[in-house]
Image 1 (cartoon, one colour):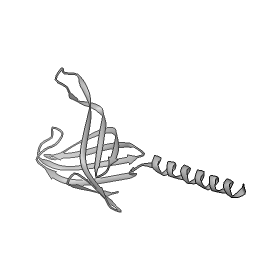
Image 2 (cartoon, one colour; image 1 turned 90 degrees about the vertical axis):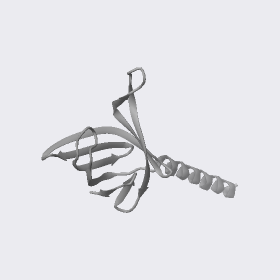
Image 3 (cartoon, one colour; image 1 turned 90 degrees about the horizontal axis):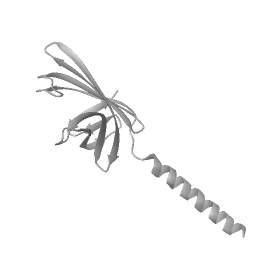
Image 4 (cartoon, one colour; image 1 turned 180 degrees about the vertical axis):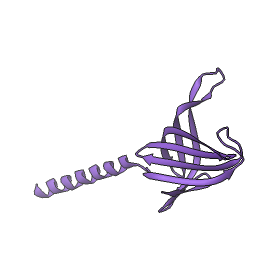
Length: 130
């Protein structure tokens, strides 16, 4: 009877540990930044851009500083993210898109994703941990 109780106890501990690990998921923490030249993004013209992603749990804040013609403009967008296989999926809080009826819809973006010790790739862009 003691042996059976020990086996059941060990099995329960193993199940609980597996459930805890599964619930953690694949998340990031901290800030990752990249500075690059572009012909224009977010409605801005040709210039130098610095984009920072700040990850905390499943939340993300994307901040872009656009230096165009000597003037710097900052945009900040809040959202959530999920990493599945080799992709990162962002769902942004801002309603930046409209459907065919003109109704606002939540914006979702999906990119190829990989990570190293102190960097991540979102699409083709490398972001270094701050």
